[in-house]
Image 1 (tube, rainbow over the protein chains, first blue to last red):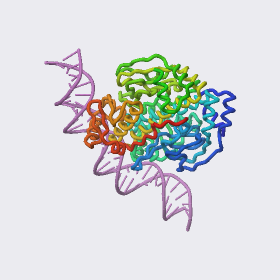
Image 2 (cartoon, each protein chain N blue to C red):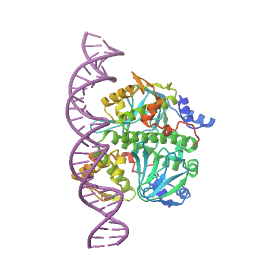
Image 3 (tube, chains in turn purple, red, cyan, orange):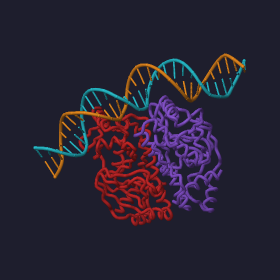
Length: 239
Length: 239
DNA sequence: CGCAGGGTTGATCCTATTCAATTCGCGTGG
DNA sequence: CCACGCGAATTGAATAGGATCAACCCTGCG
């Protein structure tokens, strides 16, 4: 399971043999969380960070009236709470949206990593920075793009992120999320998400039956979404 | 001007004499940008990070139709582009909203900091992580809170942030931003921002004339906004 | 004095919400 | 194989929050 962590970071920058050995010594035991359970609760104080090995998890906040806003979706290969290393107290909760497998890395070992492996430290830092860039893109979508563009953008982003970890290809992927969850991501009602999916289907941009999503017209979808993948920083580059 | 950087980081955690000496050696010359000018352009490749010494700056994205979404507001004492150290290519632009004074720190020196001062490195990392937490809170507001709550939340946040750097006290502060800019922050039209300000005034929560904002009923404003300052991590705590 | 940028107000339109009902997909047990 | 149940998807009608367009007002300033 240490492979997961090494592969994850190696997608960002080249790692030395020494760094790989160190990383292999970091990971704790594998844990499983069934769909719908909490991985992390709000205001909790964490002592380890969690790497998602399989499944989909959501970071979210809940308001007084019960409304929920999902602020990040995570797939296999994502750190879901690396920021907790420095923030200490969680400002949001994390749920498993599907069955999830994770491995954990103690904070104390991450601190040690910053002491002894500055380059690895920067690669980890980069991970939280990409998180922030993704937040900004979602914010732009929520503030200034309509529902259709927002949904289209989410599909473009998820396709590329899943493709990167081998979970999507040929413009197709599994997306086992309910329309209510998508509403919580996009800041829309469930009913409206439904109508937007219907709209994208009618426009010939996608097909979507059950959990299977196919992008029929990538160009068109990306154009509608004004999708520019720069913020995902998918290329490997030295830090 | 090195004091600015030291004070900024010392608000997060205690710094040793050695660390302070090092930080003092990092900062470059002071620069001035008049209101309305660009500090950083989108897709630019930066080689230094910028610390805002005075003024207000905005990070934003512009869409095809010219619509703008401001994703972060920065005040004195904020790093406006520390993430560029790792992201290399900027995913957004930064403008001076008022006259701004800044100092710059070369990326190469920041990398050196991660090599030689792991604790400082973590304090810097923390800064980008708080940025992300703020992004998440704004997202929650944009997705699931109405205009009035969003505006109220922004005022609560800005008051605490300005207070921390001595620019606000007695529930009052200067906010030299146009209603159009506030619209770009909140994801609303200028006209609607105007009506929301009028609403908060009528409700007796604030007074706002010219650039002077006074919070008349902090409890009420924070309640409307569902404001919880945890995400700003205002307390000093070891990292 | 005239102008420009920002603030304020009104009328109308439209996107998305809410509430309510209906239908589909699918696993379970008889 | 069918009946049942349940969560999710789909559709319709009424409504609200906010956008847009268009004035008009104020104030600082050359």
